[in-house]
Length: 158
Image 1 (cartoon, rainbow, N blue to C red):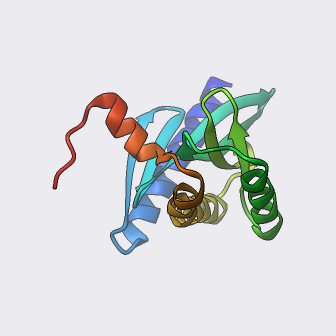
Image 2 (cartoon, rainbow, N blue to C red):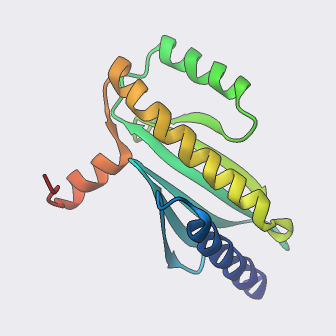
């Protein structure tokens, strides 16, 4: 399984490098380890993770922590479900332990190709970047990027 994970990781690395090169300068990318990658767009981070699932069938998950500390109400939950219905890629969920709204898409790693990964990453990044401010405006909370900056005590340039 290790060599398969290495191959998938190397493919993802190459695909994401190409995606950033083709972007209009609004994307950045970093490989954190052999199974974890991060793409940044605006106030959004998209993590691309390789996960064991079944023998010889790892999953690749694109996940964005959209908003933390929002007021998770019935109204917000309903809106997220309606957005799920309308989106061709990705789905919203709520992590009750972290009080976090998450947007994610899973794909089969062994058959993943460049266009499929690019569409997933771009869609997750774009949707998360568009809806985070709308959610915060109506339901409170902070973006996951703001939360990361707060937790790591990173000074923000003004």
